[in-house]
Image 1 (tube, rainbow, N blue to C red):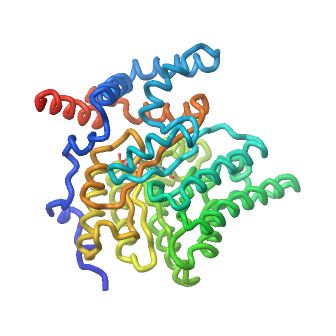
Image 2 (image 1 turned 90 degrees about the horizontal axis):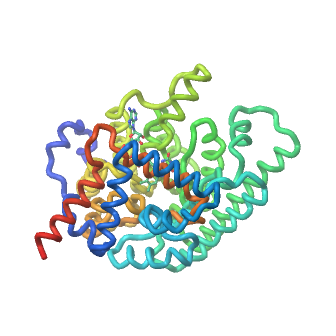
Image 3 (image 1 turned 120 degrees about the vertical axis):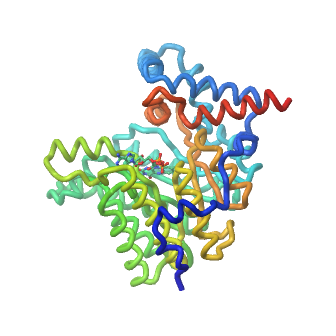
Length: 407
Ligand SMILES: Cc1cc2nc3c(=O)[nH]c(=O)nc-3n(C[C@H](O)[C@H](O)[C@H](O)COP(=O)(O)OP(=O)(O)OC[C@H]3O[C@@H](n4cnc5c(N)ncnc54)[C@H](O)[C@@H]3O)c2cc1C
């Protein structure tokens, strides 16, 4: 029977005391030495300023293109903060450090730019290596991949728009399906859950279809394959409900990674250019509401749904913890996980982990040059829009002050 809290309007829930708090910076940064924290302060101070951030990222890109000796500098600063290393072996230190604080690692091969069949095969092999690393390894509770590392965006776009495919394209699409099939089969054989990231709305349908095919095959005993739900999309609550009904109809478990969505600007631009309605909710509160309703839906249907909440939003994380409590779920109930990105929202990750919740961090890795687009996105995300310090910077400075005064 569903807990009545899910029918309570959100404004009322806002007044309920959360059962987990994220303002303890000592817990948040306990895994960082003073030196590492000072470095984090330096990095976030740079990215906080729009002008400095844009000059620095521009110079870094240029330096790499011209083969100037900037790699060492990038590696020792932003790369080290946001990434595990250039390969799985180099990420070991991060894996162990997070694990000491009961935070799991999700190895995320973040090299972007594979465009050929050989490149897609190499990416597939790398994802398979993350599964080998995760096998029987409690420090790595999940794995992940992006479909656009395994197939071209153009082809996915053509498949979604139902354009007739040439024989070569049909073969390439079959290769993509085979690659995903191989990854999910191995995930199932190793009993390691695998999440499929969500991408642009105009390529998402074939990814979804394949994800459900894989769930039907491999989610018979528990959720091994997770699809991702971008709750900034206006159709996404319905998609989530439909996915659940499909799982119920075919008697498998639904693995749901819930995120707000990362490609809002691209979505709006394309919709305007091509003259269709923007698929994204019209406002941030509308996205927030959709996200929180999605959490309610998953917890309400926890008998069949396993949830990974991928968010840096404090309210949503507290709301989920509260929902679990109202449903008498233990914090470490294996059906619910919380995840953030390495180098961000440590206050959420480490405080949740300390309170006993299941937490993991995406740990991106890959050659510095190929991870640059990922790093640039992180820099943009942490750039101040109104001249204020970003939340990360505020937290880091609070902890630096605490350590200075406390010692
Ligand atoms: C572990 C993890 C995995 C992730 N995986 C994916 C993935 O597979 N695919 C993907 O797309 N993203 C993914 N993301 C990124 C995610 O979608 C968000 O972009 C990011 O986490 C910021 O949202 P938030 O919930 O943390 O919080 P917030 O900072 O509270 O929300 C910011 C988000 O709100 C939405 N938003 C902001 N302004 C508006 C507006 N005016 N109108 C409507 N909506 C608005 C946007 O989605 C924006 O990103 C992942 C994030 C994490 C932490």
